[in-house]
Length: 257
Image (tube, rainbow, N blue to C red; front, side, top):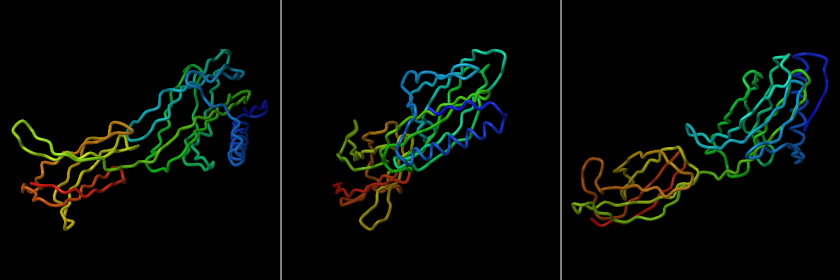
């Protein structure tokens, strides 16, 4: 916890505090001394300002609009009703395991009359390598400048697609199709594209499927073994390719028709 009790100054005082905490944050990350409060699932205690007590709660993370949302709830319980001083949320950054800043967000305020605020930090992890990432954010009272910095870790596995299996399936009329299964990891919220190429490398079939619903799933693609132009594919070896958000995997499969 970083605390300062400077009381001389207004906006300049807050800017000075931000610069000091930002510099200390960078130094600590570089030295590996992460001396911060890591938020708990329920409640990360409370720290007091002259205007009230601040609590931080972890909310359930989840995907939205293709991004992984790190969700927090900040409660500003004002005890001193004589003032309408905001709580400032600043130094909101995401760093990798080496302490390198990956993302940052703009400062914002919570007015005490608002009581609480839920915030989501959206991160497109699909573009990042596997590893542990840490979200930091600092809170400070505007009158007495008491402050605290919180952190939350997220383990990330980079998106991956791999071939699993294929088999023939039949409908009630006896019509044959080929069911192809690919394992898709860490690409939830993105729509996979399934393509079939003949031995000459010519694409003969293509279809975009519904968005991936789970972070680790066996995704089924069904091909009736007809080309996009309506011709039945001949027996032979074909290449099945699945692409999802820049990740892809291909597999050669021999079919009999």
